[in-house]
Structures are given as structure tokens and as C-alpha cells.
Length: 50
Image (cartoon, rainbow, N blue to C red; front, side, top):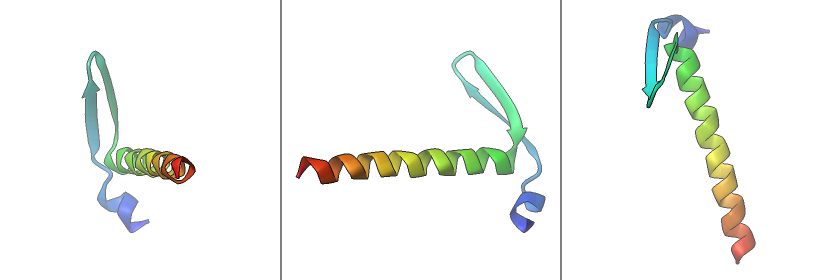
């Protein structure tokens, strides 16, 4: 809860022609989840290649 309260400021992400505005805490959580999924996928592929 403290994390959300301290990171309530709006932030804008621009990628090419798309611009998305959201609270900083939501942006950080989404990036964390995407990184976690990418790590799982690359780790799984590395194990099956052996």
C-alpha cells in the first residue's frame, strides 16, 4: 500500500506513435510482470535446449 501511495504521480510512456499515460506505480508493476514473464520464457528455453 505504501508503494502505491508514494508513486501516484502520472507518467507518460511514448513508444513510436503510441502515447500512454498512467500512474507510475501501475507502469512499474506492468514492467515487472513483463520482465518476469520474459525471464520465465528464456529460462524454459535454456533448460529444454540441454
